[in-house]
Image 1 (cartoon, one colour):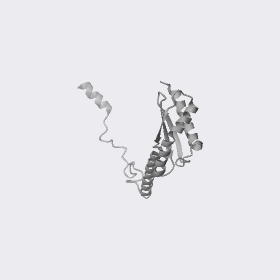
Image 2 (image 1 turned 90 degrees about the vertical axis):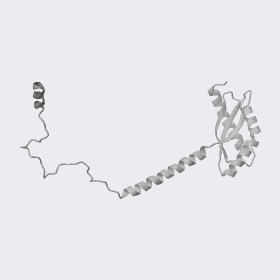
Image 3 (image 1 turned 60 degrees about the horizontal axis):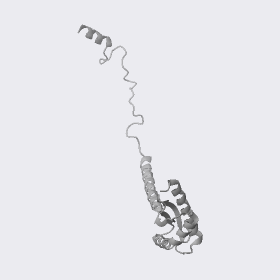
Image 4 (image 1 turned 180 degrees about the horizontal axis):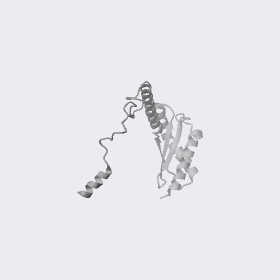
Length: 167
């Protein structure tokens, strides 16, 4: 088993070699400049490599690019073997990256949230508070309590102490 750092270095090298070879060395018109290598992962034993790619275009362009990558797999593996200098050149597997689809889904959800926020903002622009602007009760100036009379509900704490002592 190779360590993770070696697998990471090999994955980075594979990504660079495949991208350069697709850009300059492969003359397949199905690949062209529409294919972008997004990520590469190598197993711990350095025997298999998964290359993730995206294609700019519709579903037909994606299918053509997948067929082009499958047909160029041997040439790309040879280029990786020459550049890597490892005992066993990893087997390449090409997988269409789901990143653009996921990004589009997230963007659609964000647009939906923005539209909902705008709708709430429009509804609330003419709204008024349910009660008064100041919800706290204040005593009216007309009904001030008289200072001569004691309130009925206030008890004297000294009375409680005498009841406890006598009881």
